[in-house]
Image (cartoon, rainbow, N blue to C red; front, side, top):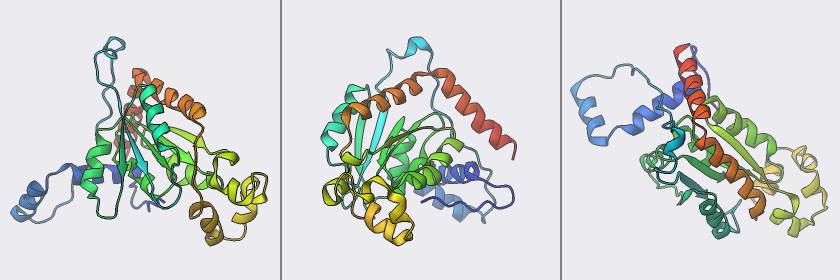
Amino acid sequence: MLYLHVVSGKGIQDFQALLHQGYSRTPSATAAAAAAQPPVPLALAAPPSRPCLRPDDHAKVAKPKLVIFIRKQNRVLLNLPHIVTACRRAGFAPHVMNLRRQTPLTAIHAALYSADAMVAVHGAAVTHFLFMRPGSVLLQIVPVGLDWAADAFYGKPAQQLGLGYLEYKVAPEESSLAAEYGVNSTVVRDPSVISSRGWWEMKKVYMDRQNVTVNIKRFGELLRSARLHLKNATACGKAASAAATTTAAR
């Protein structure tokens, strides 16, 4: 979950700029700079947007890089091989990342800063969209019962940073909860009943005990939308302008 406390006119764009400046530096350069002089406030600059291609450039460039974050304990993508194949068919070059506690943030930053799109099931790892460039695409897979959190914690902030944002909302029959409770059960059809009992009860059911099997045809349609967004030089330019305008206004 992403909570950003805004102080003295600072916002999410400033936070992203700070992350970009910190993780773009090599460790040796950072250490040398620290040894050479006392700490001073950094002049922050937002990460540059994705390159905006001319219409005749698309046939010449490599396939856009798409990073897929996977989970191992809950909210697992049960048909991951089919998802990877769908990404390839949609014209992406998919890269699967299995994040662990010991995965260096520098490695995650490098993977996402060079990426054109990211796919992830709702969870803390989606916060890494902060490493992506304006004009890139975040495609969040939203399990049953997590709609509000997905939009509030990640969807809206991603759009504030100039990212294209798409949601794949898991249908009741695509959730493992359907097999456990029944596809027409209250747990699956009306998550508000469980959520009304408090956050811990909601977490126990919808976050800790749920895995998903996405519908490849429906998922493929979203992938094509993501591909069109990346091909649209106008959209890319507008995203860059919006981010620059917001930063300049601070």
